Image (cartoon, rainbow, N blue to C red; front, side, top):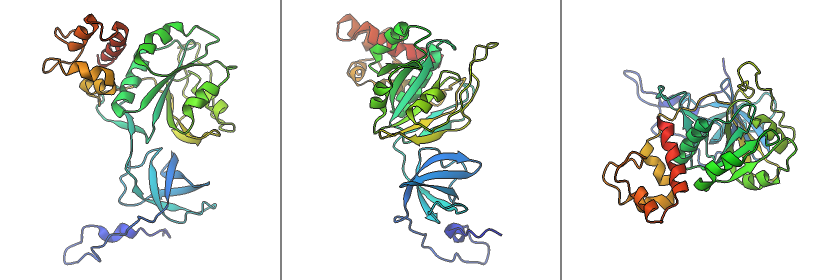
Length: 322
């Protein structure tokens, strides 16, 4: 029999001819708040001050109600000593939540991480070759979640970054280029004091980058398959790590698809403040796509108030929905 007793167990619906024990639920306002840094088979590793505390879910927390990056309140033994176990009794409100579906035919949303302020899209310039469609889909998910995107181009020793840089600079997002010997200070500067989730196709060098940013991270790396040209999955679950220079990064498993069925195309324009002033003049129901005959964005380009490169980059994400 378990030695852990849940304070909420008295709040189930009362059986016939019985009365609930009390109407007062426990108040966890004074319970310590920790960050969920990893999840493994029902056990939640939580960073509380300077120690890791292992916890389980309280009965009133849904089975999928806690994800990496969540700030949670803990009850029970929070010493972090070997063999001890705390309990997650409350999930604090999330500032952001990054989601995806397995593919566009799958409408089931999969939360990836909570409370990230930045999303770094990691893509290789070669081995494997860049997938612009994948980049655009992840960008759409970032804009929908209102998370600042960053584009990180790896393996610059194998190919030039010029083409991809030219394609994405009009969006105004930070773009960093690296190779196995490159100075990472520009990346460290972008990550400092932020919570940044790293997302990318398998084999793009994400784990290698993490190992350089966080000494001792020991994320497993693997080569790209010569047969398929695709990367092998190395990271199997999301994990949050504190950066020596301040801030956190959340490494996620490599993805081979990124469904955005949960995103409404009309919501993306809201992530571009310089475009919203123009779209107010669009006819009702305008999707702001290239096929719209009276879109005010086209009129803004013709009038010289909006650059065609900026509009082209914005509309390229439209194709991510097709």
